[in-house]
Image (cartoon, rainbow, N blue to C red; front, side, top):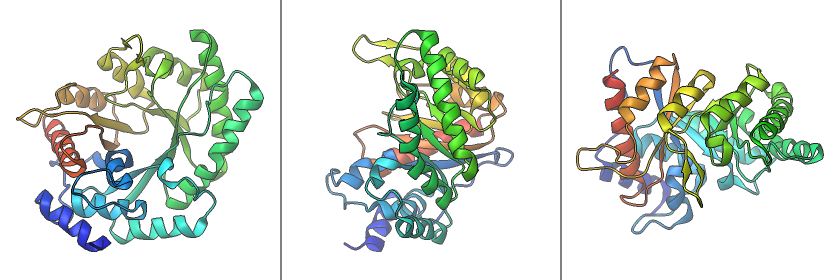
Length: 303
């Protein structure tokens, strides 16, 4: 099955045609985007009965199979393409060709922003630079980074704030924001990450609050209250990530209250993209994405 036939088949299986993502009247301050992690199993060729999806075709899949007009790339699917302008030009061309906006790049595997040694923090900045260039080339507004560190609560805040300030300096020539997701460790503590934002105190440094990532320590089971965390992180948000894991027969996410979270998002005065991030195993990628998208739309309609 070739690329176009594959995407057409996915759209048919999903029961949608071209873009069907219009939000209810008066709620159009929100738009829906798709995080590339949602299709990881398609990219890896690990979803039973589904054709492998080329990362170059991610935007076309988002639009034609899911009715979503914005995409959030994940850098790990483009490892080895750093500095390859021709490749990212093609990625941009394909996104623009189907009317999809490139929103941001999520950056992993680039080191810890809050490393204890300054030389290592500087090295982390250097590892992010190719992704800053790619994000600017694609027309994104931000890169998402991880504020990992070590030490005491306050020490980690100071180190992460310093690393983020250095990254913001590197991002300035590109006109990009640097945003931090609650992504494990103390970054999943809303008070800690909000404190980091206050220390950095730069308009181009913000957060990407994730509905689901409030586990601080998987081994101990330590978690942070997701609703409190969302309230603490939303004042600094330049995007939000609507993570989903499982749905009940009524189409509600079983691990979190989307209606409550979207009210927190709206009450913070946020405008912009709400990113679908399907992380479940069953159903498959397309159905999980569409269930998440439908739930976001229902939650927005209730505001």
